[in-house]
Amino acid sequence: MECKNGSLFMHEYLDGDIEAADEQKLRKHLQECEECSEHFRELKRTIAFIQSTSHVSAPANFTEGVMKRLPVERKRAKARRWLQGHPLLTAAAVFFVLMLGGALSSWSNNSEFSVSKQDNVEVKGHTAIVPEGKTVQGDLVVRNGNTRIEGKVNGSVTVINGSNYLASAGEVTGEIRELDQMFEWLWYKMKSTTDNIVHAF
Image (cartoon, rainbow, N blue to C red; front, side):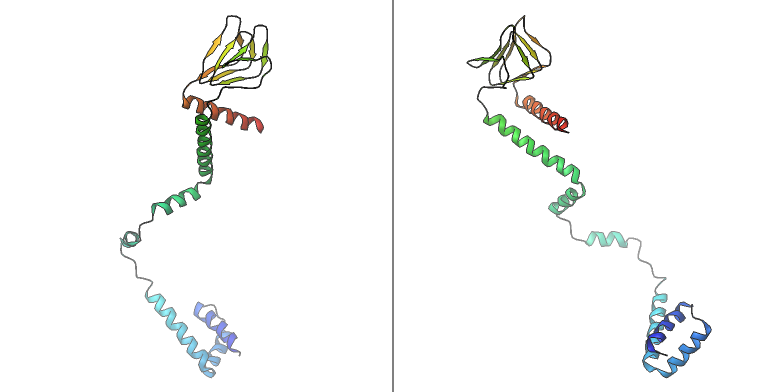
């Protein structure tokens, strides 16, 4: 019998799965091969040792003791693990921070008078005027100035850092908003950006 077959028979014998004829071959081989015989004794000793320790159990507070001895995790690593575990929230937070930064930068840097490009809007000084008898199609946005509506606006009118005047003949089909504070403007900006993203899809 080859030694590799003897090794296979050893494992079958120790598992209790060996057939009688193979057990006879194994016994004969172990009498003839000193190396396999020594290997078989080592296997039997190992199994006996493992069986003798199977009744040993850890103390009741073993897990808590080990956990207390572990080094404290740094806040940075803890935060990184949380961010990696919540990718959707992380992406939303990064998007919000970037949008907030861009909006605040736009608010503080833009103090010039501006009017959204619309037909039938006249500009006099810092006032955007929709003349009587004229109609503006779409939303009208005026920044750092005033608005006077004598005609009709088929949309909303938003005045940022200014005031809105609606003549008795004037008509606005949408909302009329005056945004004088940064947070009102920021909310308007975020809402319009979100609406644009939704309409794009």
